Image: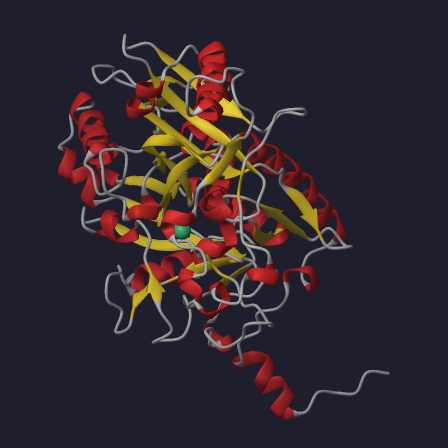
Amino acid sequence: MEKEKSQAELLKDKLFSDKKNAYLVMDDKEIDEVYDFCEGYKDFLTKAKIEREFVTETIARARKMGFSEFDKNRKYAPGDKFYVLNRGKAVILAVMGSRPLDDGIRLTAAHIDSPRLDLKQHPLYEDREIAFFKTHYYGGIKKYQWSTVPMSLHGVVIRADGSSVEVNIGEDEGDPQFCVCDLLIHLADEQMKRPANKIITGEELNILVGSRPFKDDKASELVKLNILNILNEKYNIIEDDFISAELEAVPAYKAVDIGFDRSLIGGYGQDDKVCAYTQLEAVLETENPAYTCVSVFADKEEIGSMGNTGLESSYLKYFIMRLAEAHGYRGIDVISATQALSADVNAAFDPTFPEPIEYRNGAKLNYGVAVTKYTGARGKSGTSDASAEFMGKVRKLFDEANVQWQTGELGKVDAGGGGTVAMYLANLDIDVIDVGVPVLSMHSPFEVTSKIDTFMAYKAFKCFFAEN
Ligand code: MN
Ligand code: MN
């Protein structure tokens, strides 16, 4: 027989916070659904490694689900679905709601760019009969993590005549791959004395691309010549075409299950494709919402959201203003009434490196999607600190929809810091809070997330869109 609870125990039940590991709360049927959902995520993550590929895949799926290209002069009916493409590197999906537009939009925003090695504009060179690409890393990386990793090459080249060619090499079975080399430990005495941020320097992130010379003993740089010849035959490009190219080297491996229990996902670029994919699923499944639902898939977050495909730019604002105008509303009224979830990842607590995260307030694996009231650094510098009222609204919404969620502060007060697109949405007079998946080894070539947390992000975005 169960012992009767003491008065203190009963009072604790009533008053104490009782956030639990989501596995202990969910039934097996729902956990099966979680694992199934993540199969689709792993596929997508493997297929869409860079922002352009994410956009292409997103538009293909959206069109299949009845989305058509946004027409700024058209009056849309409730339930209509449309998208706006921004320069092939960012995209907005929208589903028209039945409420008047000036009741505001339900907006989610994730980014689809991830840290990587971009090729410089004059990338190809030969050094002592070995050919390399010079790179310029993109986003915040621990540079030493990016050597000795098999890499693939993705992007686009614009030729002198204006025609373009897409590049994707190193992903398919049988494709050659590339890598940055490191010094053998036997001869690394001096290198190992360098500080960690210089073990591999930016100018040492050179990608090995070949070693076989073109057969001729008269000319020099025969290895480089041979590479250019191969590229010319395959892509019809010449050396100067690299000037008008965006080529990105990323880890070449597929997303996989991690752990004997397959509870985790390992893969490249989960910051922030784990949130982008989950918001994509949520918006694609949204039918006849009350509020107009919009998801933006933004580029350039990893370099501060700068540039015309990043959320510091006005393209989202312009879209909402055009939409408002076509339906007889003032854009600013629609924007000011809009509520948003900034869908970005958070740091997951890692027991091997407990120091920089204050456990009580850090995000934990399997505790569900993390709601982050503020990010920033030091004294909350460089962040949007969501209001108690908006936090309260989101809390109630997620609780009512049975979303497993937790709060997550990005590390200890003075441990470092970071930001998301939340502040740029807040600058538009939008209520916004960060909601996303905790990640281990964030910004490394192989990031790890929890399947349950990933599924809960999807569930969170779905219930946000389903508000009436
Ligand atoms: Mn991010
Ligand atoms: Mn990031």
